[in-house]
Length: 293
Image (spheres, rainbow, N blue to C red):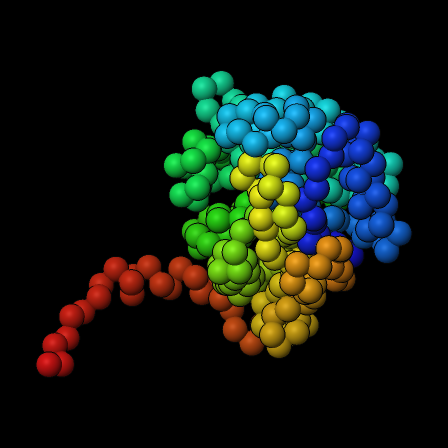
């Protein structure tokens, strides 16, 4: 299959029509290049706050409420685009009000009209302390026509046991939509995504929100680029980098992924990280202190 992952520039969309056309243009571009799966970034849906005006968009609760209220329209838009262009789409994640809490949720839309939703599991300090966004649940594996797909939203990719849980459930591809303000944030998520590909002998797909829009609370400034990663083993590049974009340059990054190569490297790679994972536990549980001073 061909995968496209976004370095997506945040912008001020003053009307629904402007927002919807922007999404359609991006999807159409990826489709014209033969993409079967496309990945938008974390919190890309914050653009919807602009529809409520500058006062709401620049406010903590105002922006969350504005975006959450637009979720049904946004979901329908991406469901329609997935069907029209016959592709799988991980839509931009959004803060969604759910009863008494707010979660960070991304939707995976398929060409057949079936959709699944993944909530972020572990919140960053900003999400906890400033936005009061909570970890949702549960962690899911999506069985699709293009393979078994998991989603680790941004910070989630930095926690090995989450990636391992998806691999043990059968994940072949793990999507990592991200939103990072500074370069160190981008590299934390990228290193996490590459580590999960190494450990799980799978493919990870990182997308990034980029650009500046001071009127949108929480996504005023963003850095990153798209990247598609695999294990450093047979059938994959020695660096593990199948494709990467250019820092802070808007556009899609593409790579062709063969699921058979994932199966092969797990069964008969030069190393067998996924298979040997369990050998850590007995050794890690018994650390011997040896004095050398």
